[in-house]
Amino acid sequence: MKKGLFLSLEGIDGAGKSSHIDALEALFAGLGRSVTRTREPGGTALAEKLRTMVLAESMDPLTESLLVFAARRDHVVQVIEPALARGEVLLCDRFTDATFAYQGAGRGFDAAVLETLEGWVQARPTGALLQPDLTLWFDLPPEAAAERLAGARLPDRFESQPVEFFRRVAAGYAQRAAAAPRFARIDASRSREQVWQQVEGVLAERGLLGMHPGSQA
Ligand code: TYD
Image 1 (tube, rainbow, N blue to C red):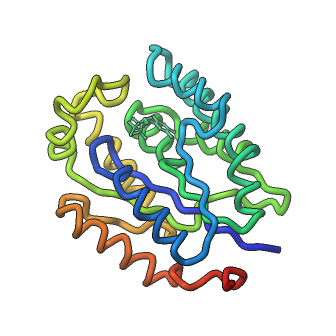
Image 2 (tube, rainbow, N blue to C red):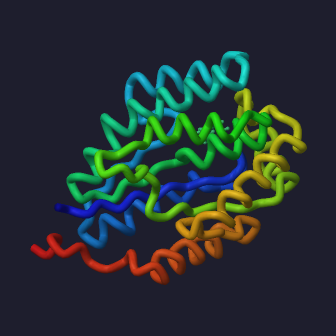
């Protein structure tokens, strides 16, 4: 069976993760890998509709969590599992760690309920849960992230939250990172070039930059 590579990017709003996705795609394509680039909430027509609702409408935290996981289920079934089965590199701008950080730590919603939903949505036939192979966590102090975001564009429901909300979200990410070796912390307070060097360093350390066995012409 072909082995895909599932890579997620995480961090608070303004941490700068999205600006490295192009470079990651180019890096893996240069190694002969097929790359699927996607994001959450979103990544399918249905999940993108749910994303629009979640980012625009007021709702209670359970509704929000259910919608995020409904979008994730469609995304996992339609896009993520098929790409991994084809042996591709799957680059995902946010995944379930964002739900634990934003809905769990940020909104204070019950982590046990989130774990139940995670268990349903990410269940695999083997009994194991689908999880990223590597999570690049762009860590930046919330004050610095707020400065980067200021005036950038019209803020959505999360971006318009006060800095205290992002302190909780950042703490949520730190807690997830401490519990799972798949996390690699990237110091996102450095220059863009230095941040990219850290990303490349992590990929090299974890042995993810080798040529794909089937890729030689
Ligand atoms: P983001 O990934 O930052 O996209 P953009 O760069 O277009 O702003 O925006 C997604 C927002 O959704 C972000 O504020 C975090 C939030 N979010 C959750 O609250 N829960 C989740 O499970 C996910 C995936 C995202």
